Image 1 (cartoon, one colour):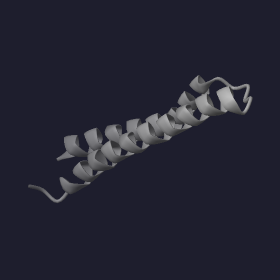
Image 2 (cartoon, rainbow, N blue to C red):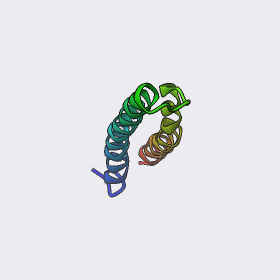
Image 3 (spheres, rainbow, N blue to C red):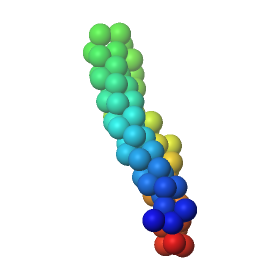
Image 4 (tube, helix red, strand yellow):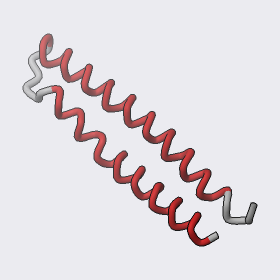
Length: 74
């Protein structure tokens, strides 16, 4: 195993953890917006919560691309 092998593995682990965090954040905000729309009169639909996934998806893609590039160099 070369010196550069742990870095792609760490990036992949971070990507998986970030995916889990994304699911938690989007799920929580969807549930909150659904509750607030029904009981508090919020006008935004719950589907707006999916916009919170955009920065997470961008970060996950960057980590996956970096992991692929670094693992190909070895």
